[in-house]
Image 1 (cartoon, helix red, strand yellow):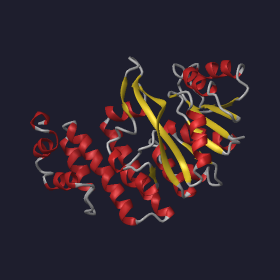
Image 2 (image 1 turned 45 degrees about the vertical axis):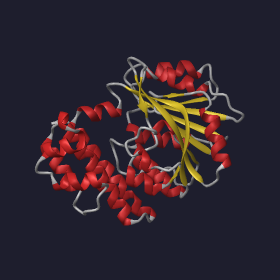
Image 3 (image 1 turned 90 degrees about the horizontal axis):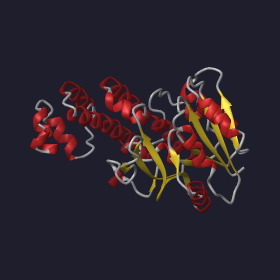
Amino acid sequence: MKLSVLIPAYKFSAYIHECLLSVLAQKTDFDFEVLVCNDCSPDNTREVIRYLETAYPQLKVLDNVQNTGLIGSMTNLLQAACGDYIAYLDGDDVALPGKLQAQVNYLDANPGCAISYHESDMFDTVTGARLKWYSKEFYNAGYIPQKADISHLIRYGTFPQASSIMFRRHDSMLQALDHGSKIICDYPWHIMNAGFLQGTIDLLPQVFGRYRVHPNSFCAMTQQSATRRVQVTEELVSACRLGERFGVDLDVIQLGVNHQYFAAALFFLKNQEDDLFLQMIERSAAQPLWFDGRHQQAFELRAKPDDVRRNLWGDHAV
């Protein structure tokens, strides 16, 4: 089997039909399987999946008898996968035509590439309107080469959109799930896979996917809760430190840690949550390796958050 596409699903009854069809309808010159794991959803996600199973023999359905969370579902999916390559898709996202063929072709032609990813259209589920291009408009895009590696991932954050990745099968796929995160699972998983595979992380610039933003999406929930944003930040920091397992330079890891705290500080600064800004900006300089000049200036002016806002975003931000 050339490729396994893994799709975890929990309470996605409104989206899972479109998601699965977008993958099952892909035209390829190789065999592929689509594995979906329903994590004991309380809605009718299971019924939608079972309906499609009758029409598509390459669709394999796993049903968790109790809710296990994403790591439990991914463990089951990886144990069942037979493909030489592994693709991942969130159950509320959409694959565009040509995705699977393009990524398999790229991995076949580039043996040094461990993980491939592509551009994604980040869109609003209500209006269908594009919000932005995920990779091209990623806030650190200017630092990411077309052929990146684990050090870029640690230093600059999650530049691959989760539903765009395809990677090579390896012997430590289940170990790659042992990263300790409970909320933010894609970033540490990418780091672990990149570390075990020891290859490059390569961008295909074509738009081969749509990343759905809705009230229950990870992005939306994190934007709405300061407490959750703090928890996510600590998990991102822990993910950076996973690089120690793979011999990543300690300064690169510390720069990644400082960057995550700095990014959180800017989030809280924009939201006028000055106490949390101060907490995060001070953590970002526990070891003074600066992400950029803005970082150092924000730390030096940390007692005057209005001045930091003004310097970064102009008078209208104060």
